[in-house]
Each structure stands twice: as C-alpha cells, then as structure tokens.
Length: 583
Image (tube, rainbow, N blue to C red; front, side):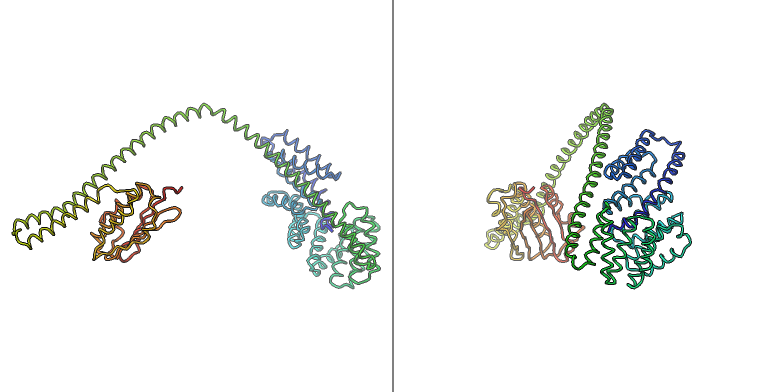
C-alpha cells in the first residue's frame, strides 16, 4: 500500500486551505511590489497557466497539469512571484507522489527549504507536510516524523493538529514504537474537539486499534469495530477499505483465518472500484494469508498484479521524467537562442571598436615584437662575445699558469746548467715533454670535436688523459650509451662539460676515485658524476669552481644540471639531456 494514500486526506485538506491563503498572500505581495517594475503580461500568462494546471489536475489529467505547472513557473521567474513558484512546485511534488515517485517529489520540495524562512506559515506547513509524506513513502519514518512535527509546530487550527498527530502516530506504528503511538492516539480520542470530526475520529480509532494489537494481539478489536461502524455510516469507500484491511490483519495475527478471510474478501471487492491498484494488491495479500486452500491462486494473482503495478509505475515515472527533460531542454534551447541573439547584437555593436583595437594591438605588438627581437639578438650577440672572451681568458690563463712558468723555468735551467751533461740533457727533455703535454691538452680542450661515429672513442681518450696513478676514473654504461640519438650540439656540450668537470676535479678536489655513470630512459640521457675529493659548499660552486659555464651549456640544449648539496664527502652532479627524438 502506498503510504501517502493512507494520509492523502491530510494533503487534500491542506490543499484547500493553502489555496485560499495562497491567493490572499499573492494579493498582499502585489501591493508590496506595486512600486517595482513587473512584466504584467508575463505574470498574467503565468496565472493563466496555473489556473489551467489546477483544472487539469482536478480532472486527473496529471501529465498535462504537470507540463502547465512547469510552463507557469517560467513566466513567474524574475517577476517577484516566489509564492506562485512555490505553489506550482508543491503541486508538481503532489503529482509525483500520485504516480509513485517520492524521490522526485522530495527533490522538488527540497529546493524550497533554503528559502523557507522567508515564506508564510501556510507555505511552511504545506512544505513540511508534503516532505514528510515523501519520507514516509520512502520508508524513512523517523525523518517523516521530524517533518510532521515541524508542520505541527506551525499548524494554526485544531483540525490540522489532529490530522498531523494522527499521522505522526501512524509513523510510530511503522517504527514498532507502539507506546508512543498509543499515547498520542489516546490523547486525541479523549479530547473534546474530536467529537466534532467523526471521520477523523474513525481514522484515529483504526490507528489506535492497530497500535494496540501490535503490542498485544488480544487488544484493539473494540477500537477497530467502532471505527468500522462510524465509517459504514459515512459510506466513505476508501476509509471502509482501510478498516477491512486492518481487521483482516488483526484476525490473521490471532490465527482466526475465517474472519480474516471474510474481511480480506470484503476489502478486495471494494478495491475493484479503485483506480489505485495497490489497494487491490494489499487485499490479495491478506486473502492469500487467510485462505490456505486458495492461497496459491491468490499468490499467483498477487504476483501478476505486482508486476503490472511495477510496470505501470515505471512507465509513469519515465513519462514524467521525459516531460521534465524535454521541457528543460526546450528552455535551454530558448535561453541559448536569446543569448545568441544578444551576443550577435553585442558583436555587431562592437565591430568597429574591435577593429580599431585590433589594429592598435597589431601595430603595438609589431613594435613590441621588433623591440624584443632586437634585444634578444643583442643579448645573444653579447653572450657570444662574453663566451668568446671567457674562452680567450681561460686559454690565456691556462697558458700563463701551466706553460709560461714552465717555459721560463726551462729557459733558466738551460742558462744555468751545462747541457752537455747527460743528467742535464735528460732533465731538459723531461721538462720539454711536460710542456708539450700541457700545450697539447690546452689545444685539445679548445679544438674542434669529432661528432661522428668516433665520438665515443674521443670521449674515452679524454677520460684516459685524466686517469693517473693517483686518480682512478671509473666508467659505467659508456659502452651501452647510444650517442647516435644525440645531435651535434648535444655531443659537443657533453664533451665540453665532462672536460670542465675533469679539469675542476684535477685542480680542486684532490680526488683519488672519480665515477661517471651513463644511463638513459625513454625521455632522456643521464650522466652521473661523483668523486671522493674534499668537496665544495653549494654557495661557491659557480664562483670558485668554474661551473657557471657547465650550467649554461646544459641549459642551452634544454637539459638540467643539479648538485647534491647533502653530500658530505666529495661532490655529486647529475646531468639530464632530452633525447632529440623525444616529444
């Protein structure tokens, strides 16, 4: 049984009262917004569609009413008609409940909660009440009670309060909290106001009887029979059905299957005239429970009807989901067309200014680019001059430091010693050979570098030149290093960088072991250097060890040069170069 059917009288009762309060509220709001510019034509169209939707809803043409409420809202937007929009949304939520889609109903109602503090009590009562019905339908009875209580706090009439308390008790029954339900219902029965509302008294008695027999299966029959007597006199078929079903449930619980079957059969006969097939399904359930002989037949009918209801509910949900989706899609298209039109007009109005701005930007950009280009060329030229100057300075310094003193000492030696002597000749030859090697090293350091297939052997010769009895150079991975994947500039840079590292090592580190490790991956080549020398502090790397050139060279070919500042002994450098075929 759909829970909202058992409390639909509450929703219908509030709808009648709410509609009158809603009309009065709209009149007051119109007075409040009399000085604000409102598109009266749009408001009139919204009102017209709202009246049409109410009429269609009364005729049970729910799909057409649903569409009319949606369209009505589009005319109320931005017209200070928030109450009208809320009214339409509440009606839409009620339609969702009617077709058995409480999730969508809850989604619609929840949108009203952020602004509920600004609404009048009539709106608040209806919003909380409808939301409570949604949660009851979703079997979240605790949350349903919470929202029924919020509605109860704002209810103005005693009749509203009686209806709400009755439904709060009904939810406590679903939660198997019979004591709370009984306390509420007995309080209502003992009140004087209930005697003026016979129909509601019958509903309270029916709920009280149910709460009692769920606590103790021997209790509650008197209340159920009294409720049925009242209902039979008022000839309300839906209420009579509820009494028959509750009595059938009572007798099944007490294993009096003959009486249970009698009431289940009566409820089934009444349900045949109802549009709501869920009532018929409930009657079949108790027919199957109370008649063992025909149980399988009733169960078969129950299963078939259950499938039929499930299919119909899904079709209804899909139908209204499609209506809502199509409507939203249509609204989005209309909004897009309006925005496109506004954009076109804006573009048309700004075309001339945009053209002038574009020309100014183009001319200014030309000047800026030209200026930047000249600056870059000038900087590049200065860098080249500076590089040439540094190279020349280095060569001059090397010749002075490494050759000039040795040549001067040799000349002095030839003047002071008799070269005819064998020992003097051998000493002179040794000095000349040393001068020759130093001159050759300086020449090699600044000579052209072969970048063809012999590059690896040239690099290997470089390592051999610096490998001595006092300093051993260890190579790892050089023979597997594919230098063909490096371009000419990269090879020259690697050679010069390694050369610079070896020179620095020889001059400053006093290392006895130097390691070069060559590796590569998909993206790059990696060269790792380490030695066991005295080490250097990070701040003096560039200024005292001539490594500024190394870093500049590496960066110029898109690589990186990093120094391990955590190393306590010796130095460690890591060079990374991108492969020329890597994107």
